[in-house]
Structure formats: C-alpha cells, structure tokens
Image (cartoon, rainbow, N blue to C red; front, side):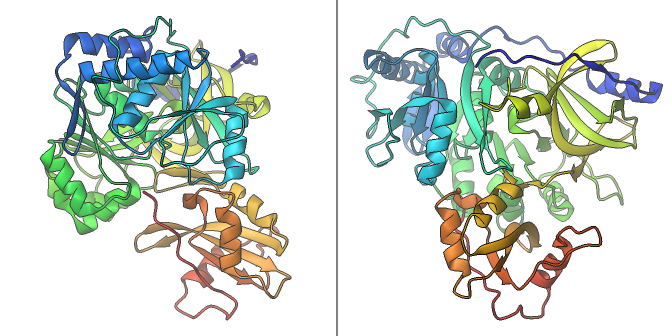
Length: 546
C-alpha cells in the first residue's frame, strides 16, 4: 500500500481532570519485539521449543519443528510456482493444521493472507479479490471456488512431515511494517472495507499481553472463523509465545463438544463472542470450568449473564475485551472480578499494552463522566482502508494530544470514562452494530435490499430476542408477489449468511418520526408485540453461524 498523506494535526484541548485521567490510563508502553515480523518471532520459538506441541486438533498433534518444516515446504512450493513476495494470497481452508501451515507459509514468503469463505456470494468475492489485488488462492480439493485470474495451490488431506516439508525457510526478508493479513468488514455503501494489518500489530497484540497469560504453558482454543479477526489472537497468541493452539474440530459449535475439547486438551484461554458466551452460561456453564481465562466481547454484555458467570467461575477468570478490526482485534480489557453495584455497567476497561485510548468530544478530551467518541492509537492501527483514501482520511486522523503527535483511529463508538479511568461503552452514532462478534453496517444490508426491483423502501434494524440480537428488515414493496423468502434469496446471493436478516417483514409503509426519519422503534415495537403481525408480514429463519 502506498504511503497515505496525513493532514496537519489539530491540537486537542482539555481540562486538567481530562488530561490527568488520559495520562494515567495511557501509560501502556511495554518493551516488545516491534521490529520483528511473524516469521522471525515464530523461528525464535521453534529454536527454543522444537519438540513442544504447537497445533492440536483431535488426535492430530504437530510440534513446532514439524509445523516449521511443513510451512517451509509450502512456502517453497508457492515460490516455485512463481509467487512474488508481497502479493496477497486468498486462504480458503477449514479450521485445521493445514490452515495454520498455509498462514505461516504465506507470511514466510513475505505475503499477506486474505481469509475468505467459499460460501460467500461470488459477486462479493470478486470485489474482495479486486480490492486486495489477490491473484493467488490456497484451497482444498473440496472447495470448488476459483476466482477469475487466480492461480490455485491445492492443499489436500493431511500434510506429511516427511514428504511435504523442508528444513530451511525461504530466504525472504520480511519487515515488521509489512502487511501480514487483510480482513474485510461491512461497509455502509454496499462495498466491504478491506483492513490490512501489519506484522508489528500482531506482535503488539500477543507479546507481553496484559489481558491473559500467554506463554509456553498456555493452550489457546482456536474457535473463531479465520475470516473473523478474533482468530488473529487465537492463533498467534499461542504460536508466538511457545504455547499450543488447540483447534476446535467441527465447523459448528456444539456446547457439549466445547466442554469436551476444553477439558481433553487442557485449554487455558478461550475467547467467546457475547452471544456464544451467553449461550454457554445459559446451557452449559461447566464447559468452561477448566479454562484459566475466559475472554468475552463483541457486543453489549448481558449483565445477568455476566453475574451468573462470576458466580460460577469466581473472580480472576473473566475478562471483558473490546476492539475494532482496524486496531488489531483487542484494544481494551476489563478483568471482571466484581460488578459495580446497582449500576448496570460493565466497563470495557483500559487500553491493552502499547495501545492508547482517548475519549474526545469535538476537539476536546473528555474528563470522567463526559461522553465522547472513542479514539485509539498505537502500533495496532491499520495503515488504512484498501482503495478508499477518502474514508481513510476521515477515520484515521492526526491530532496533537498533550503536546504529542498522535495518529488516531476514530472508532465511531461513544464512551465515558469513570473516575478510576475505566471506559464504559455508550453505543454508536451511526448504524453500525455487532452481532455474534461480526461488525455489520445496517446500511450495507439496506443497500442490497433496495437494489431488488420489488423493493421501494427498506429499513434494517436490530431486535433483542431471548437468545440475543437479531437482524430484522422491514420492506415496502409495490409488487404483490414479493415474498420474504425471495428477498432473503436475493440477499444470500450478495451477502454472507451472518448479514442476512433473521426476519423480513413486508409493510404497507414505514412510520416516520417528527424529524422525518424512519421510526425504527415503532417498527420493532410492532415486531415485538404479542399482537400477530399483518397477514403480509412473514418470517424465515436464518442459518446459524459456525
């Protein structure tokens, strides 16, 4: 990515109370290998612990030496095929040791990996590959996806440490500021945003972590889809610290199986999205009984569920985490050792190591008790959005904070600092939401709904159900033959399953507020009402996310 021009920094003002609290919470500097890329960090672990288990899935175990040799072999295979260091490689493999080998191989070649799902609509995949300039794909034989113009490298079955390996890594110099991977997040214009992440940002996340113990004795559960940035923590948190990455064996999470995996493999650290955490606490709290640390986040937390978990597990084990993809997975953490009495508040905490956080209203730092927009700084920040210079300039800004030049990411989230410096999330100013850990722009869903010829107007909202949050769409159509099922098929052809509304209601009109905006509350009230909806209102279930 070419260097992005940065605007002259605006100097932020602030009362002494505002400056004091921000100085206190931002004392996060910690020595870490910021000039080392992932391949060098991994090689150092291999040298220290060659025979230690690196990756485990079921009865399959690969040591650090075996994982190193297998990834060397695949990296050399890529280079023999004509791969040029620095190019993006699409990765379409199931959660498996082969997936980890492929990620390492791409990084050892000096490339960036782009995880994607073969089930995503073809139109979306074409856009992602174009934005990322991706011309290589590593996939299994089982996946038939082959984007136009891409060279495909197949990884079939179990890799053999004797036949598919090589002792020496490719002689490719990989700098710490090179791009390691690209994640795509939802975009309000209908175009997903490509977020590139540097090697240095991964090291900043997992080296010297304050929010969980990450060392040679750690065993991290890799549960998240690799397309979700939580996988960055699950995989590299283990492999760059000499621990073990335990791969959940199935595509779909079953709570009974989750408990078996945690117990059988001695998992010490687990990250769960809020919805999955709530389901575990409701139905199978013993599944996490053996874990040392349970990280949870991605949406507003249910206080009854957190209270139940605290009763079940006791203090010192629950950690509430927060962070956008643009800041490399986690930006803040809050150990949940007790709840604030009668407040209903669960802070998202303080910045993690080598991360800084500012709450800003206009051009002023907020003192405790005043709400503002959450801004993040530090080595975790992405260099910007792929092919979107205007949006990059809008969201990644230069400011002078307390006499220091800072590059900040404007999260769009609002928060309030408590007197002790802990941050409380207060919602968003736009229509971006998180459901099951996935960040979703409601406008992107509406954009694709409105492109259907039968749709005159649409509105997408989030409903709260007994199981968590769910996407709901309301559509005004002039076509008497339009059906929710047809509209859902239209969306499934263009969006990932997690962005397809659970229900689509056909309405005669969309109610408006006094200011002329769609009255989403009124629509949701009708949806939640015990009164049966009009005959044209119908619902279809959405496929569960793995």
